Image (cartoon, rainbow, N blue to C red; front, side, top):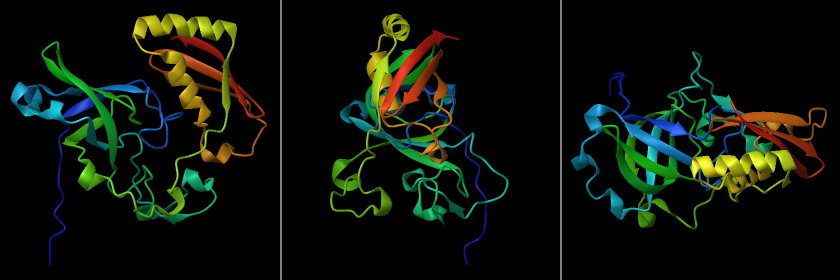
Length: 239
C-alpha cells in the first residue's frame, strides 16, 4: 500500500502577466492570443544550460500553482462556467481552479528567452496566467503526443462563442493608443479579444441590472459598459 507521504515543491519562477487580478482572466489558454506574460526564473535556475534546446519548440506547458484559489476545505463538486454556473460536476470532471491540490497547467506560445538583470525570462503569449503566479515546471508541447484530434471533451467540446462586439469611446481609444506605444503591443486587439468572450463570472449571465465593469490590465484600469450585445470601452487609464 503506497504511503500518504506529502510533498513540498519550490517555485522555479514567477509569472509577470498582463492580468493583475482574477476577474477578467480568460477561462482557458489560447483564447486571447495577444495576452502577454513573462516567466521570471529564480536565481538558481537562471543558467543558460537549463534552457538549451528550448528554442526548438513553439509552445510550452506551464505547470503552476493557483495561488489565489487555495481553500482550507476540499471541494468535491464545482459549477463550471461553461454550464452557466448552474450545474454541479465533480471537481475531477472539470478544470476548476479550486482543487484538492491547487495545481494548474496551461499551453502557451513561446516567444523567446532573454536575460534581464541577471535573471532568465521566458517570453510567452496566449496564456491565462495571473500576475505573480508561482511556476513549478516547464515542459515542451509535443503535438503528436499532446494533441488528440478525435478526443471527446464532454461539455467543452467547442471553443466558447464570442458574445459581444467591442467598441471604444474616443477617450479610451486615445488612451489605448498611448498605452500601445508604451507597452509595444497592440492593446486594442488584446482588449477587443478579451471582452468579446465576456470575461465576467458565469453568475452574471442573463442578468442586466449591472452593466458597468472594470478590471486591471497591465498597470491600467480597463472600464467597459454593456448594452445588448455590444461592449463599449470607456476608460483605459494608468493606475
